[in-house]
Length: 268
Image 1 (cartoon, rainbow, N blue to C red):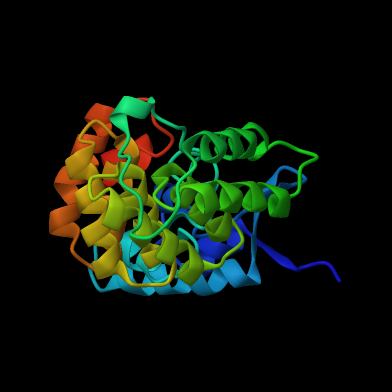
Image 2: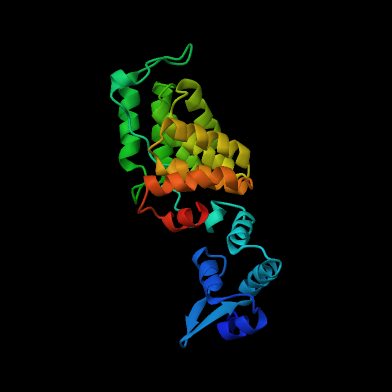
C-alpha cells in the first residue's frame, strides 16, 4: 500500500506559522522527509505530526533552533540525534585498533596467565588482516582475537577490537565489558574510552557517555569525532550550554566535517 502524501501547499495552509525556511531546516535535520513528485514537494502523514508540533511551538514563541533541539533529543536509539545516519564502522564509530611497536606496549600480563607474545601477535595480525573485509565471517575474526587473548590476556588492542565486533552486533554489555577490561590494563587508551562512550550512548546512559567521551577528548584533543560525540551526549542531557563550545571546537577541528552545518547551527 502506497503511503498517501500531502503537498507542501496544503501544509502551508494548514500550518501558517511554518515558513519555507522552517521546512527546509526540518528536512535538513531529517525531522521530516519530503519527496518530490511531479514537480511538487510532498509530505507523509507521519511528517504532519512533526509539522504540527513545530507549528504549535512556533506559535508559542519558541525559536526554531530550540524546537529542533527538542525534536532531535526526543528521538532515542543508535545515534538518533541524527536519525542513525552515522555509520558504525566509519567516521566516529568503533574502529579497528592496530598493534603498536612492542617497546611502546605494556608487557604486563594478568597474574598467573602464561604469555606467548609471538603467537598472540600472529593471531592478532591475522584477525586485523580480515577484520571488516567482505567474504570473511565475523565469527572467524572474533575467534582470531580470542586466540590472541588466550596467548596474551593483556593484549589491549585485541580487547578493544573484539569489543568493536560485539558492538557492531548490538551486544552492548559484552562490548562494554571488553572496553572496561582494556581500560584496567591501559587507563589512557583513547579508543577504549571513546568506544565505551558509544555503548553508554546507545543504551541511553548519556551521563556515562559524557564521562567517557570527555576522557577520550582529554586524551585526544585533536579528535573531531570525540568532540562531536561529547557535544551530542550533552545535547541528549539537555545541557546545550555545555555542548555549545564543543560545537564551536568541532568547526575548528573539522571545517569540512560531515556535521559542520549542524555544528554551525548549534554553536551560535
